[in-house]
Each structure stands twice: as C-alpha cells, then as structure tokens.
Image 1 (cartoon, one colour):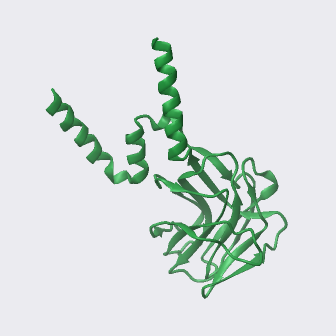
Image 2 (cartoon, one colour; image 1 turned 45 degrees about the vertical axis):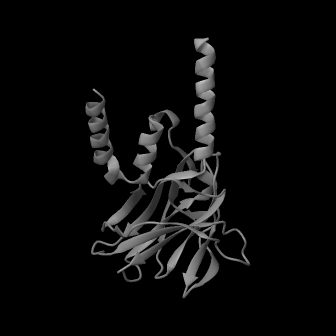
Image 3 (cartoon, rainbow, N blue to C red; image 1 turned 90 degrees about the vertical axis):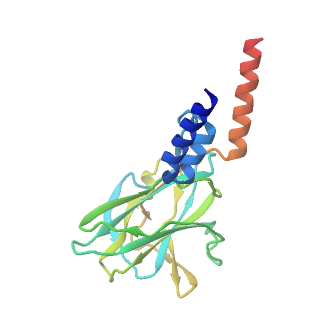
Length: 219
C-alpha cells in the first residue's frame, strides 16, 4: 500500500544518506549509472618515479577535457615515508593559468584525509556532490602533521595524458601569497584524476528529451 511504499522509500533514503550529496543526486535522478561519471582529466598514465615534497599548500593547474563540469570524484597520488603519520586537505580553485595572477575563487575543500604510510599511495575522494567546476582549475594538497620529505605529490609525464592538459609548473601558497614555480623535470605534472557528470541543467534537458521521445513512441 502507499504507507508501506513510503516507509520503504524513507528507509532507502536514510540508508544512503551517509554517502553524501553525490548519493543524494543519484537517488533524485533515479538512475545515476545511466548518465555515468567520466574522466575529464587524467595525468596518471606514465609515472616518472619522482615526487615533490613541500611544507606549504601546493599543486598544479589542469585544463579539463570533455564537456561534463559537475565534479563527483577527485583522485591524487602521493609518496609517503614508512613512518608517516599525517593528514592532507585537497582544495580546488578556479583558473590558475595567469602567471601574473594566482588561482581564482575557492570552489571545493575536502575533509581532512588520513594519510597511509610507506610507498606510493592513491587517495580517491568519491561522492563529492554537485560542485560546478570551470574548464580550467588549480588543485592543491596541503599536507599536515608531516615534516619535509615525509610526503610528496607524485610526478607523471604530461605528454602521455589521454584526457585534459597539464602544465609543467605548479602553484605554492607561501604565507597567503601564491607563487608559480617550474618543475625540475621537463614535462612533469602532479598525478590526479578528475571525474565529472553533466551539470544539473544539462541533465534536466536530457531527461526532458528522453521524456518527449518516449511520448512520441507511445503515440
């Protein structure tokens, strides 16, 4: 009956609420897998077996490929020492291509991430939710509770990238002032993967189009 159906639906919503805004969007759409997330930036194809460790917030600029601009997942790679015990915070900013300027407005800050020690590690932040991103972003990592050399972002060959475009320089936030530095190795970029889905307005158009097509077929 209606009461039973409503109760079942409420239980399903409650059971998935801990997954965050990304899960809520999937539920509201009814079939997130039908739309699906896609990679719009991936610099982790060919490793240079190097890493860069800094005590300040730092990271790279990414020009995204494709057309999807609603962020749902972000991944970055780092190297950690055997005795590492610290955290990391990821931030995403608009733009960052102007060498005379700095990264633009802050558009996303992750929760504190507990780092895993000993070797090459990958952090994946999933179910980020409905975060609109620009065609060019700067992403950074701020390592906390670590000393120099204990953790660093891994470097990859930008010429091997399959989607998006990376740049062989990086931004560093020194006491609130952004500085642009060149990588010591040619064609080196930090390892990251950005995954997105169409923005809500585009999803609404796709849903409307599918509905119109269905009605036409019914007629």
